Amino acid sequence: MLMVSPYMERRLARRKRDAVRGRFGNERFDTLTKEIVALHRLAREAGMIASIFGLEGPLRAAVRADLCRQGWRWRDADLAARTVLDEVYRRLRAERPDWNEGQPEHVALPGLQIERTRCIRCHKKLTGEQTKFCSTLCATSHHSAIRWRKECSEEWAMKAAANWT
Image (cartoon, rainbow, N blue to C red; front, side, top):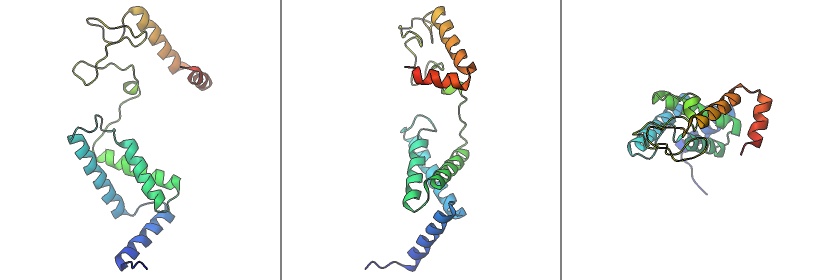
């Protein structure tokens, strides 16, 4: 039979209480947050991630999975993981890009890791000073499509997304 030390018994009991409550104790929250901040800084310094938010998905999934294995309900574990990562990014002073910066057609400036070499609309090779579009026709049609997407109703947006290839 496996012998469990009194320390481990207390630790397991605390984790069960946390799982039932669906939230962390302050000390456990701070410890986990500090560890993730340190991990994030190491990954950035090593060049393993290009964006400060590059590990957000895997970290949230890992924290959530560990909590679920400890007996937390999925919804509580997901909320706790999101809360931890919100605190991590607050400590890292990370600012999320606005909606337009997150779109694939956002301009990539020279000197960045990825430079645009083809037209957004028709995919022709760009020449000279062209940064996004090969012609005025492509630019106008692309901007019209984007404007339509932003202004259309939710119902039309759902239909367009379902049919868009």
